[in-house]
Image 1 (spheres, helix red, strand yellow):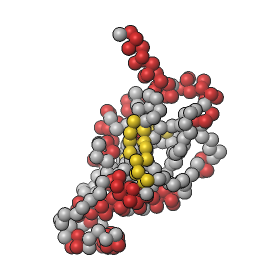
Image 2 (cartoon, helix red, strand yellow):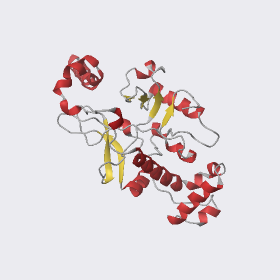
Image 3 (spheres, helix red, strand yellow):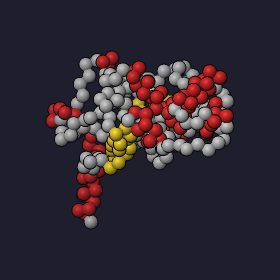
Image 4 (cartoon, one colour):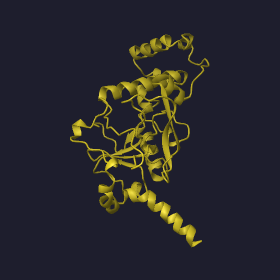
Length: 271
């Protein structure tokens, strides 16, 4: 019994030590490969914001079209020019022009991960990590990822530096700190899950969803929303991806916001 208890405590420590500040300070010099040097905040870009935005729009539009027969309420609130754009896209992709005349007609839909593969040439998913005691990780399940491609998004509630996050952060390994001090809570369990769902419901405008909450479930609508499970590099394994910050522009299509896996903690009309 004592041996089992000690092994349990040792495993917990191996997972926790990467968040224990004194241990990190003492071991920084021993882990040079785990550090990513960024000379200036403005230069912390592997892929341009234009390319990131283009990828998100491409994937989200494909998801929207794939689920087009369930978007009737949203379409009624969009301008005719936007409706025509999606009708043209449907016609080009040969998904059945007759569907435009009868939205209640049955349509064969693909799974989100299949849409990701058809759109970007690869698909990703959560799976057990190959690193010891690392828990879950994110793996390419199909296709090949080209250099510089967007492979995932870090979902969660977005907190400004002055907003409370103490209780949400207790025992939470999914708090991500951005360069400007903004925090993203990507935990899909406990109080973090409750907070995200509450903010998600608060910002909804009728049928228009301002964010995606399906990443909290097993039925994820946005297959990119798995970034919180991407593991860091180690001394034995180099990192093959890196984090990059991206601000969603104010002109982002409102009908596609239903796929954004982030929500602001506090409502602010100027955000």
